[in-house]
Image (spheres, helix red, strand yellow):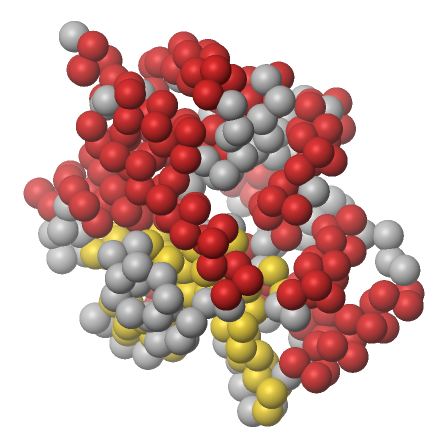
Length: 358
């Protein structure tokens, strides 16, 4: 729930460590809460419907995918809506290519492909009407720069693009890797800036959801996030691609690497494009991740795997080691304080540690 999400932000921030529900100590602890439940659902599926697919938005997506892969045989498709929002909405707007709200990640005129790990993926391949789209992307980024649009995340995304030559698909989640101090300051103020709700779920938004659940027609919310239709279209589209054996390409999918990204470990969970049909996922081989992102990506993979080790074992020392492996954590004593406070805050939702202590 939102209260516990807020713990994942407020407690580390209080001790000078940034993060959110999928990054920093908050990511480690959200995984401790969501992994036991998700694995439990998948074990239930093994009993009731072993041939079914599970399509999951549960965060942290790569951590959960790793845990389910280790513990069950369920056909588990772990997806992130960052790529869907980017490919179906943000990118067409960036390139001024209507329609600006698309139904698919890949269209006849626009085919983007992004790779990396969850919440750190980069647009490494772009085709516009069958041709290399990067020259057009560069031209549009120059126009954006001249306009001096006051959109913080777009400006940050363009800074990354100018520096590295690649567009980051989800700049709000990677912000702390490059602007740590500013990110931490904003996290400390997040309760004030977002009506005391870490994801911006104000009373007006809850009312909007309640109206939809009661049967009202969808109308665009005045404050659009988090009601982009691309979120639902991705999950439902993947479902249709399986049921109809479409063989359609979808991005933002987390899967065991097995050579799809050639300079990342074969057994790691990566994020990228897949062909989806009745067999499930067939990852598209994308070659190397650009070298400039390789070190940080490998760091995140190691942190993720240690975090999953802790979630599956209920070993408190392993949990401490996972926190120390997090890219944001830079002090052993601080990590210990954060761990103790978050364990107390989340104790009702981390059954694996109760079993261990008893």
